[in-house]
Image (cartoon, rainbow, N blue to C red; front, side):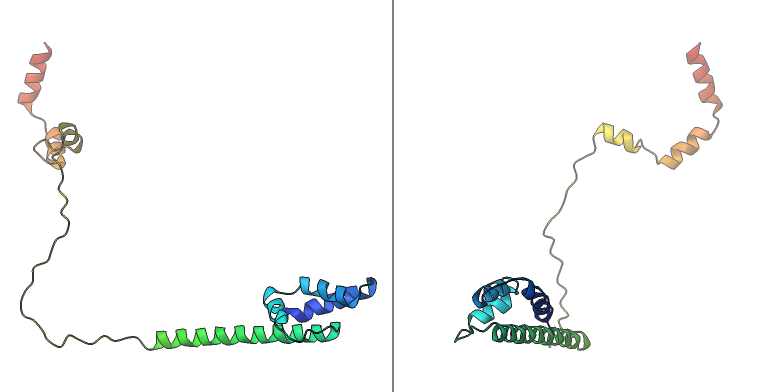
Length: 152
């Protein structure tokens, strides 16, 4: 059962409290229907003037639409399963070539030379950072004497 049956039940609960003509009931009932059901009801000829007949027709159309939706879901689900279950295989090339073809390079990115600031920041002063750090840790008496002499 679709949503139309619950809408009809709610609409019937309100009818005893309101004094509507048959045409007004039909117009008010149409306002609450789904657009797809309302479109199907517009295509019915001859037009039903009786409220109860109109309700039965609306419920029938709503149920049909719901069944169609379920069938399309099942179909989509089953087609998805077959697509996953049977992987596509591609045929191997019929001729094999022993000729080596070099790779084509479309884009080559050249870097500009480092500026002096970048060189200093990166520590490219002629030796690696591990060499500099070990060199700095070693005690060199000649360097200490020169430093002391410069300070005097």
